[in-house]
Length: 440
Image (cartoon, rainbow, N blue to C red):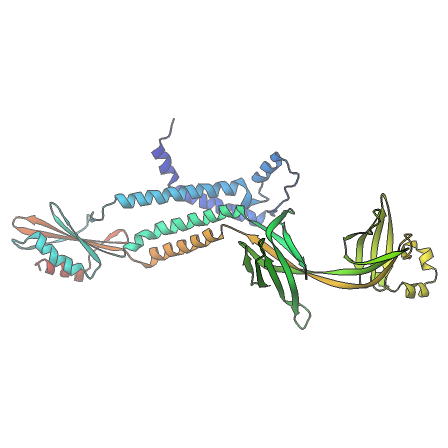
């Protein structure tokens, strides 16, 4: 059995389908609150079949085929409803009066066209009037016609919200950590991958205000955005006061306070100094030895400032614990550098290491969000609210006055419709129209 295109369109524009889809999406939202979500899993090294399985998983409801399919169907349903409603509105006759009308007989020998002029004048205070001539003369008065657009505007608003949700998949979310005084141009996405911004961000200064009890009160980042052509824009980013640049939203997410070890290395005929944080790797310049900083503390092992280093040469690696007051430690614990070779600053010949001190380096952590669909969603919300307000707060009323010659006299029929429903014509309005036509 084949389905005609017209039948398919009617099914697609069905209000029942709208209700089913809305209930389905609402059910998925409930599922998302019950089932633990993992919305940004890493896709590195994930095979194509596994990616398909993830699209079917409820661990990421809003990126699953269940939610996306329902949203696409709802968008198609709304589009069909919009088209159907606009078509019906264009085809409907404004002058088709309700079957429930009130009538009166007017005077002898009246000219319907002349009488209609008086009736139009009587109805002019009600709203826009127009005259239709044919086998009979019809005067139509209407006010609040803008309400007829309410459902169309509301439907269009929901469609734009869905469109904005679709565009959101072209965006990304991530964080960028920028040490004070340094520049970064790469953001770490929620799935662990990285992405270049296309411009650079410099943290000129980061400040933290605290309450008297020591709790953080306000984070403040003074940042500089530099475009690829060298244009500079300075912005201030605070909690709940983000900055927008390059189509991306930068908001204050937090900060990192990392200890920095200031280390000096000496060898026969030379020496060098460097500052490094945990995880940094330093090349000593001889093409063989490298130093990885494993840990930095202001009070390591309760013996003051210290740093744990791993000095490697090819396949070999040795641990080295540096203390800022190694001489004082050696005087308190005689022979400790022999008993614990890792504490000996000269334990990796020909190098002699010394810790000059430990300081702190602060980094601002900014949340980066690029959502190209936010404007569509915003306009959709405005349209939806405007459409609902038109429907509920703007009454739409129509009045018909029909003049039909009958036996040398004129029969006057008056009907009224309010918000699409036939209602009884108010007595004052009926008397005004009848009197204008020459009747009583």
